[in-house]
Length: 169
Image 1 (cartoon, rainbow, N blue to C red):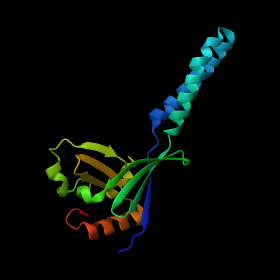
Image 2 (cartoon, rainbow, N blue to C red):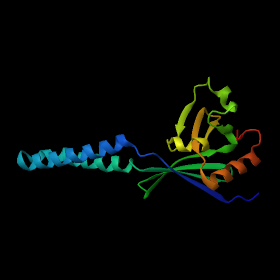
Image 3 (tube, rainbow, N blue to C red):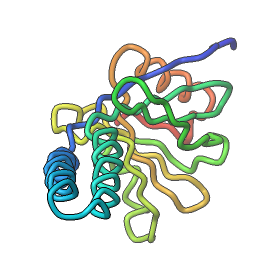
């Protein structure tokens, strides 16, 4: 069965803490720059640090997650500000224990385990019907939002390859 490459992009909810940190760093940078010119030039170093902090906090305000399914592998990438892409992880789905919607009864036996939760979801309540949890053999639990046409295709393909591990109810 030739599937090619299926891609799902999920927009994460805007992080208000990072947005506040971004604006706070800008205000601090302006204050340090003004005081550097009025008091002492050594205060330019904290101003530069605040500018660097403002840049990195700006990158974290708008984040999208991209899931790419290729040949029984799920590749997860993070797209910052719609311009910077960073590969986060590659998961071999043959090492998956179960994949089911959040709140499904198929996940009940994994509730007592101490699993490392890795959240790649949007964080919005509107996507909860499309939210899936994947428990891997290494003790990690992935939270994914399989939205849109390609999300449904990925679930359908995974059900054909792993009929005893992937559930839709």
